Length: 360
Image (spheres, rainbow, N blue to C red):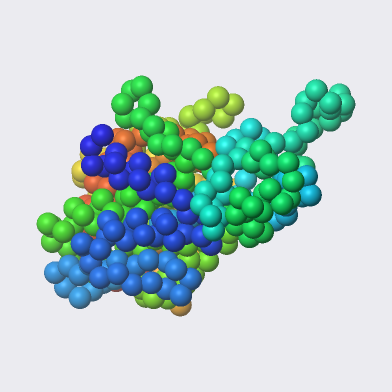
């Protein structure tokens, strides 16, 4: 593994579901501490400030550090654990998946189960098993045995999935690519900027609780008070069976968001991103989505105060919001190259021009 792969492995394997991000935050802090000053908002989002050649403008790079997970809701008298989701889980992807519960006595491993197919009626077999009918089995035979292991109501439950390099050597399999891949893009970009000049101050922000309501995006933007924002996300790859056509594909370059349900991208910022990509011969893929279930921190960040220009740039990923996602090294590297090049273009005149409506 090279240094980037080691970082991606560490970032995706560390735990940090919504509201329980401490372990992920500590790893991100360790990577960013040598680069700039570290501060926090009061929800726990981390901000790394790196000054460039001039005091302004303020450029915010945001990615959420939280991953989808669960919380212990109930322990039955028979020794099974009922849970609630933290983040958007599709019920189909849950059964038979391994998880680990973080307890005061250490991690406890288990598996998500439900009534076995052997005893289902024909009508039940046709239906999707819902989360409310699932449980986590840690091999216990009573409530007392579960409690003796350290499990308590309110404990976080995290998908158990290791980082792997797939046969082509460039595709990676991991949990939490949404959105540790965005956190890794910020880290790599700010590492590159250490030895390069840029006419602005860059704020690398790892936000909390995005998966449960864009909460860290709302609070961290008030700490940074940016002039322009880039949200680094995991793009939704559509190059899989059953999709109409592969609009967004792995190894096709970073996804640039033109629109999503909560935001229409600032047109001048959008054009600058596309122009820089062309100048650098960086392939990009365009995303314009209307699905009301797709939201990012950009939706709340761009509404800060009287509004500010913001855009989403994202390496594409397959199978997000599941125990394992797949993403590609080329997309990651190209995203870092594109973001670094854009930041070096963001002087005061350019950023002011994004919202100079008198010039059309």
